[in-house]
Structures are given as C-alpha cells and as structure tokens.
Length: 144
View 1 (cartoon, rainbow, N blue to C red):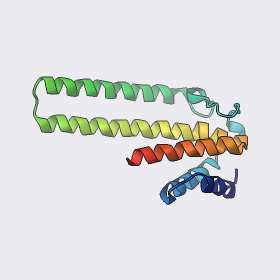
View 2 (view 1 turned 120 degrees about the horizontal axis):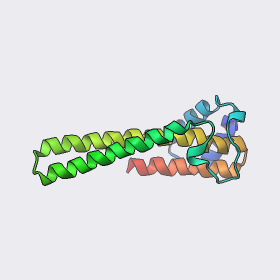
View 3 (view 1 turned 120 degrees about the vertical axis):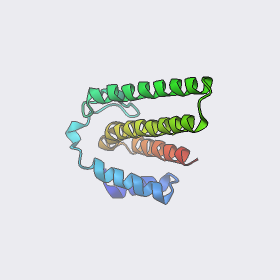
C-alpha cells in the first residue's frame, strides 16, 4: 500500500491530525518489512501470537510481564490491608501504571508488525480501513 492510498483511507475515517501523523509514521516503518515475510490470512483474521515474523518468546515475555504486574497489584492490596503509608502505596500504584503502559506498548508494536502489516500486504482496502479504524478508536480511547 502506498502512502497516498493510506491518506485516502485516513480521509474516509474521521481522524485527528496527530493520529493521522502517527499512522503515517507507522506506515513508513512498516514499508521496510519485506512483503514475503508477512503471513497471508483471510481478511479480518489476525494470526495473533503465532505470526512467523514475530518470535514466540515475545508472547511469553508479555505474559511474564503481566504476571509480575498481577503480583504487584496483590502486593498493593496487601499494603492497604496492612494499613501502610499512603505515599508508599501510591508509589506502587504508579509503578503498576508504568508497567501496564510498557505491556500495552509491546502489544501495540506486535499488532502493528503482525495484523496491520498483514492488512497492508493483502491489498484489500476494506481490511485496511478496518485496521486503521481500530487503531484510531484505540488512540481516541487512550486520550479519555
């Protein structure tokens, strides 16, 4: 998919300028991925965690990160039950937020390298529009 095609899709989908810029930067980065390295699947299907262009250890790394976060949340609950100092609890809550942000970033990178790249390689404008719409919705939710 060429950048001018992406612009046409972004014009159809109601997109804020900052998000449009981000999507175009993402497209430029994705253009460096060789097309033959992207697995082909039917429209709307994302290979999720089993894409050939993404290593299997990435998925287990994300799961391990989420399990550590789960442990942190349990630790904060225990701190509250033990009536610990509020600032200590808040510091742990901020650490949990930061860890969740890093996990979110990893999952988003994986989605871009897998699902979005597949939509671009497929050449199907409806699938491309759907994937861009999903990204736009995600970024709009994040701004709330």
